[in-house]
Image (cartoon, rainbow, N blue to C red; front, side, top):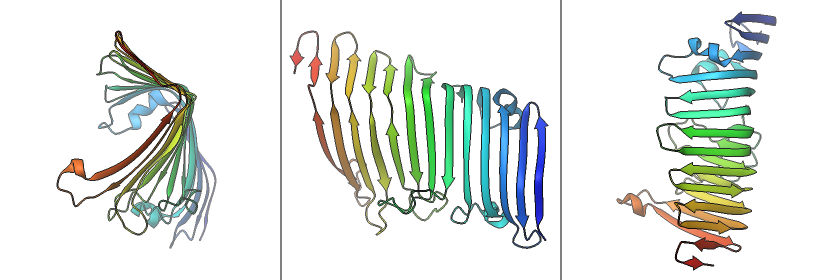
Length: 277
């Protein structure tokens, strides 16, 4: 027997939920093909969250999720057999996590897809999950640290993950990132990076060899002020780095064998007494 859900909806404390779809073979395999839409008031949502999750939120979220899987695969969280995608669009987000991290954004979009659309094209590892983060303005403040602020303009992040539920192998990941500007302030250190972008990979190759770390990075310029006396300025800069992890080494400092290549244009380091160009 099949179950058809035309429109199952509810509204709780200003949070509306709507579900539709089908459950095929409801007495046996219970194959679910469902869509869920949610319009959430984040301030009212806290009453539904676990008490152990220490977070204060305000703003709204417009969410859409789709999933195709059997109930058995869902209960086992077997990501290799689940097909799902979703998008969460936050507006006027203000969130404090663990009384230590403040996240602010007028618009923030977080999405995911399983299996990843890059599953067959990722030449480093078997990519099962893809997550995306996009925001024209993203501010992160570490409340417990004096004057620690990070700001991102036009953040565009794509994270690829292997099967994180497989405990027999260390998870692999790839981060593709791009910003118009990225700035940070930590005590007396101020830094701004113009048009940073790149790809970072941490993965175990398919042949089971040593864990690898790869980085390809470039930006149009870096400006940093270290206190009142030292400044660093560069224009175009590229960094290529790689490393292999040797877990047979007893000393953790000897586990990695890094290779780094840095190329930059017109780098200037200036102090109150010295100038290097």
